[in-house]
Image (cartoon, rainbow, N blue to C red; front, side, top):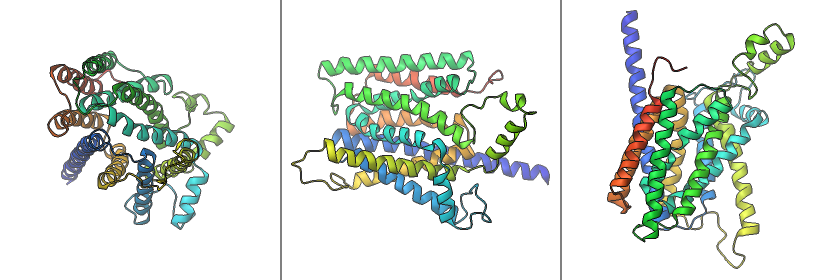
Length: 363
C-alpha cells in the first residue's frame, strides 16, 4: 500500500509539473506576441504604467481570494489573525524590504512595453533569456552561490547568441530591411535594463520567499548557535513564516503604491498640458485588457513554479516559449526571421537547457 501511495503521489507531482510547464509556455509566448502586436504593430498609445497597475490590482485581489477560501495557505494563523483584514494589515506593516523588489518588478514590467514595441519578437525573446545571466551573477555575488563550469560555459553561449542577434538587428536596421520595427537601440536599452533589474529583484524575492535575511550566510547559524542574542533573533525570524501568497500580497501592494506615484508624477511633470486626455484608461483596447489578464496569470504562475516545480522546469518553459515566439512573430506579425536569427535563437535555447541541466557535482 505504501508503495502504491508513493507511485500515486509521484504521478500527481509529475502531472502538476507538466501542467505548470504547459501554462508557463502558453503565458510566456502569448504575452510576448500580444504585447509585440499591441505596441509594435498597432502602435497603441496607452500608458504602460496603467497596465502594470491594473495587473497588480488583479494579482492582489486573486491572492486575497485564495487565502479567504483556503485554496492558498497563509503563514498567519487564524487564532491571532482571524479576519482577512487583520492579515492584510499585518502583512503591510511587516513588509520589511518587500518594497525593493516590488519597485524593481514594476519598472521591469513597464519597460517590457517599450522593449516589445521596438524589437522584433525573436530578438525580444532572446534578450529576455539574459535574465539567466544577471540572476546567476547576483546569486554568486549576493547569495555566495557556486556555479560549476558547465553553467559558466552556458552563460558564455548565452551572451554569444544575444550579441549575434543584436549585431544582425542593427545591421538590418541601418539598411532599412526590418519590418514592424521602430527603434532597436531604444528597445535594446529597455531590454538590458529589464534583465539587469530582474537579476537583482529575483535574488531579493528569493530571500523573501524563503524568509531569509540579506546578511545571513550558510555558516551564520553554526557560528552563532551558542550566542543567546543570535538565538533569540533566529527565533523571532522563524516565528512567522510567510507563504508565497502572503509575499505576493506584499509585492502587489507596494507595486501599486509605486505605480500610482509614477503615474501622477508623469501627469504633473511630463504629460502634455494641452492634452484633454488624462483618463487612466486612455488608449486602452480589448487587447490591453487581455494583456493585463496574461500578466496577472504570469505572476501567479511564478508562485506556482516555486511551489510545485524547480528552476529546471522554468528554464524549459523559457526555451520552449522562445521557439513559439520566434515562429509566431515571423508568421503572424511579419517580424524578420532569417538564418542568423535562427542560429542566435538556437544557441540561446541550447545554453538555457545547458545551464539548467542537473549534474552530480552541482552544489
